[in-house]
Image (cartoon, rainbow, N blue to C red; front, side, top):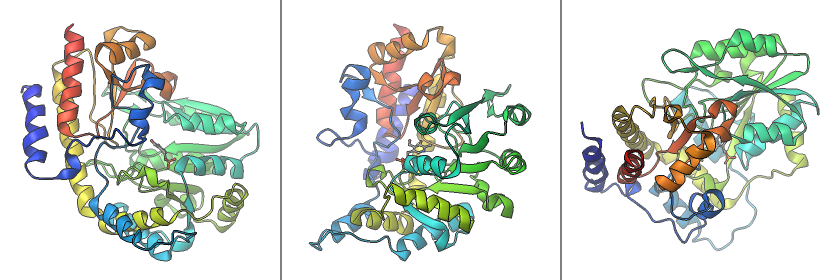
Amino acid sequence: MNPKKMSGLNGCLVYGKNGMDEFRFIDRSGTNAEKYTLREKLFHTQEVQPLWVADMDIATPECVIHAVQKRLLHPILGYEIMSDSAYEAQIGWMREHQGFEIKREWLSYSPSVVASIGCAIRAFSEEGDEVIVMDPVYPPFYSMVKDNNRSLLLHPLKQDSAGIYRFDIERLRTQITPKTKLLLLCSPHNPIGRVWSRDELLALGTLCLEHGIRLISDEIHSDIVFAPHQHIPIASLSDELLNNTLTLIGPGKTFNMAGFSISTVCIVDETMRKHYEEEAHRVHFGDGAVLSHVAFETAYAEGGEWHQKLLEHLRVNASLIEAWVAEYPAIKFRPPEATYLAWLDCRALGLGDRELREFFVHKAGLGLSPGLSFGKEGSGFMRLNFAVPTSVLGDALDRLEKALND
Ligand SMILES: Cc1ncc(COP(=O)(O)O)c(C=O)c1O
């Protein structure tokens, strides 16, 4: 297969002619999109194709845009509460897509999953306590622990002989001390793209229960999962885990609407919920904004068909990268089980982390996230966000190919 040809085909035929506007190139200049605006600051040049921050260069579902436009026909945009019907839309989605039966009273609004992590850390640990974090992981997992004066208990994720990342439950058991109070779980996991299996989740959950460690489960990527993999909310595994877990979910990744700053926290145990909500009250999380409420409800209630098309599109893009790396063995890539993030193993290029980053920015003209920013275990890796039109991804791979050949 010639990956170059394949990229051209997918970019034009599969998506362009079918008229699926969501997957066409959309110019984001003129908006304050972080991905584009922060290029100078991060890469010291505007001349990079930005494939870093985890939002998509793909239009948010039309149903969401239309619902927001409709709401704007009413001229008063004051304080509004998040309605039960909005929560019910999310509950329905979770039931249908994840088989997780959530009750309305378990849910509360949060402006951001990261803010909920910070809030939960403060609510369920004291300064100096330890929080388990797996390395590599989404960088705010580290900063939320450190900025709240808790200690990081780092557990390295290692690849097995098949290249699949695993935690080592026996090693983790030996790392736990009486000061270990929380486990910060990324499920599915950013940046390695793992969907944790039932057995893996049960092992982790059981270990936490044995040691009185509460689980904060960040499940923001749980709708971007590729069959046959199936996300399992860790809280759904048993009554004990249901009562020991805070599950953080939201539409930001699923429907490309991070800009609405809306998510929810699911806590079943009443005392735990009260504790968390007192902390959220202290920093005044409030109840969110009018347009976000509308977008949230519409996305969960009407976004199912769009979501299916999105998964197909992302699968095509992941296959394109897979076909491309087959011709460039210096870069290794295992298609992710979840997320639109490709975790590229560039160690065989023999470059230090700094040189690797320079190579991508200055030789290939690509703005990716350096693996090291996800922790020590990310050294030698680069994370590429492939939630872009296929033609854009094809162009990025062409650039990389040229840089490697040079
Ligand atoms: C694992 C994970 N959690 C949380 C977030 C951000 O969530 P929010 O914007 O709701 O804070 C991201 C964004 O990339 C993420 O990858």
